[in-house]
Image 1 (tube, rainbow, N blue to C red):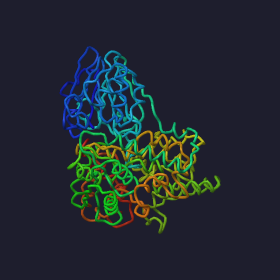
Image 2: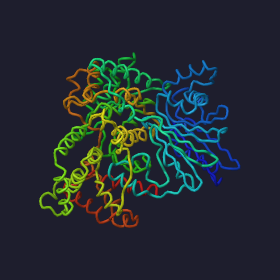
Image 3: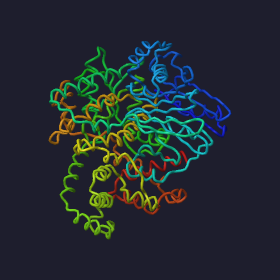
Image 4: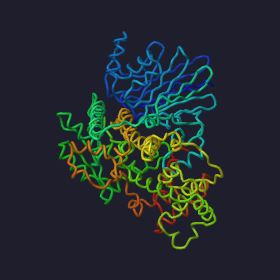
Length: 633
């Protein structure tokens, strides 16, 4: 795992020193080695920078930037099937000087061009400078496990693994994009391709970007999309065949992700996904697998007893640690450094802690993300179905009439109801559901903390129209029922832009490589073509994955209510941490920034602090943004 940066500056003002500063600020992503390449020609200055965390071929032969003929590469990630690709290239008369996947990627690109990406099984953010063709190519992996940002403004093009690198170039213009800020308030993250800054973008998962270095023309093209596999004809398959094929795909994917020249461990929560990963891997190796769990003393958040039970049954070398108020207090001020874009998923805290715990013993750790989005594991899918069925029963004329009535009533003025938990938000969500009655609105509503209307009002903006991958419902054909449709969209939104961001930054903050075995593209390509009743059967979520798990772990051990991997914010902020709200959510600070309706923010703050039923998540999102603003603006 590594960090990459680069720039093409047509004003020719950016220097080697700028390149080194941009690279060195992401030292945590690769403390083992640094590399820089800087070229000044008559049209532009171009720089490529790399920070290396040595995982494969620990020798100097894996150093980057790496060159071959007229190509130069910097790359972050792992291509797990590089040995097979190398053998194919050897048969085509290529020779190799290292055991690294970087050299394989470079020579594969030399031979097959951009089509080489179709051969790669892994997680990657790749930049290749083609001196002969005078172009720069950026490529991001299919699921978006590895981050890749780019910026283009005033004759300056930059890319980096993290936004903080851009701040190290004095010609980076940082200007907040209010539409992106609105998305953050709604979802707790900013969906791709947007970022918090104008002129700054995430390269979308499954895309590549080419910049013609003569004309500055930028083109973006998709090479992979989960929608394409959901739209394929559904496979006619028996239960047993589906279970056996899924197990076979798991074994292959998990084996690939154990390939390393350094120690490997597994994050184990005790739930189905991580237990399945740990069980299959432990079954395939002769040594004890290292597993790691973070627990909480607050009831309803502690999965550590379940993880310990699974570990004991499997015989893993298990380590657990209990998170306290003290650890939370210590980590909260660091969040805006680790997550250099506003990011409000509170499970960042235990994810950082478990990463620190694992890093004491291993350099690579496997995380079991993706199981819920691929095999239908979230409680919200029950909620989605419930809304979908009820809304379809309401006549359109009744929906329209109800919406018109609700438009005339301020929910803050409704007796009794206005004091219920998060009532105004729920009122506005119901209003939107009745108005549109479509799948996109249902999933957005379930996923939102602030409603779209609230975020607009809070930011004092009149217009707000921005396309996201929630609109992908329109791309799914009728071979997909409602469950498969919501799984496809969740894969493209929540998984890519929340879960994978959380894990990448948390693991990399302590120089730990996080691998995602359930996100092997062969697994999702197969699962997408399955009828949804193999995933969600009569209300039983993750049916197919569970059948595989029960081959390795007793059903009675695993069958229990699902617990989310979150943080007990409500408990922490009642007493120990509530001073944060007075420090960061005060009138003077907010008026100076000029971004929010100050009175509304203070109302939210004071309702919570006075003991009213207000969503702590809303306050958390505002707090995280203010801490981010203080650090980066």
